[in-house]
Length: 206
Image (cartoon, rainbow, N blue to C red; front, side, top):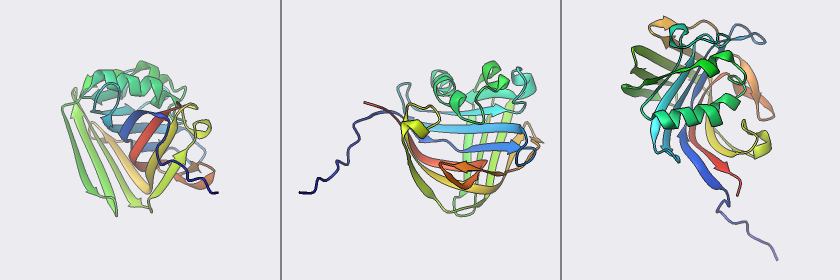
């Protein structure tokens, strides 16, 4: 007799939403020159909210003056996302900038585009403005990532990824240096250092 697997996960939802990112490098194997990760969370222990984490100088232990800051409309949520999730992401892990981030109030966030061609997240607040742009978008890919392969090493993660062939990060009207390059993508070589991530849900093991 065949056993039908249950469609219900036994794990507890930690948060759910969107988390597109742009990680610029000086070369395919070179250092990251600028990093940005945008969160649009619809469900979490700290409620909903939006936050953009910007590291314009990833290797500097300096705050907003160096372009290392967070803009958010839910400070408690933003600090939790950074401490429990983003600080474990490969591009951000052990970066001096992450430990010196300035947390500032987000005033406005706008989304433009169509995921069939290009996408823009524009965020402002705290005297700063950030524009993240993705283009040359690829085909959407759904992933179900077990804890052992997830960034935190303890959460299961579901998401819909769309990798971008090109992207730009503009901070306070200054275009950040660096380009988009290939990166490993859960065992495949199809990933890019700029991507859209929709329907992203992180689960705590039961």
